Length: 201
Image 1 (cartoon, helix red, strand yellow):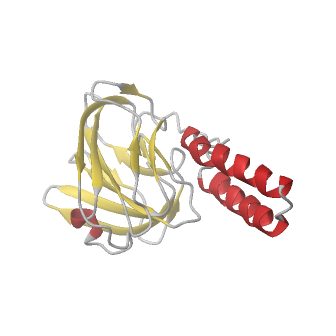
Image 2 (image 1 turned 135 degrees about the horizontal axis):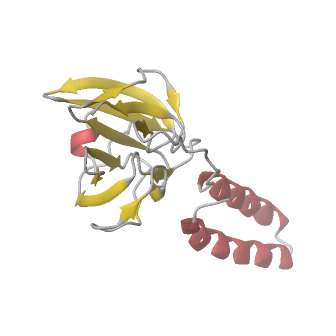
């Protein structure tokens, strides 16, 4: 499976590729085929098994945990997504989208921790009535397009697709009081299926 946003790239590429081969431009055609393969690979959307336990918080993204720190009374976790990670994003809990705050910014490398506060980003709050989880889609040097498919008031299931970030990025998650982080820096996680925290309430 691939994310629906891929088709706006794949269809034009397919038409140009067919035209290249029809005009006997075989080298260009092969290059375009490779590019099509990369686009399909980047926008892949693999099936995931979502943990049924309602106390489990799942990762909103695939990637590597690069930071876990206490910020006031919340714990902040950062996940870095390379070009080779799956880039669709998922809701970490079941609940309702309570807030969406898109903020313009710079495009520093996503592995740079200042990217969390300086880069273009989309801040999302999900509430299940017990807790509010905030996660942030963050653009990077190559990632120049943040996509979010949901609106304030929409209900989401845990692990449900909510958006994506194109071509390398970062996702931050804030864990409020009453929750605990269950992964560490260096761990690799998968969106929708990897438990990254628990609700203690």
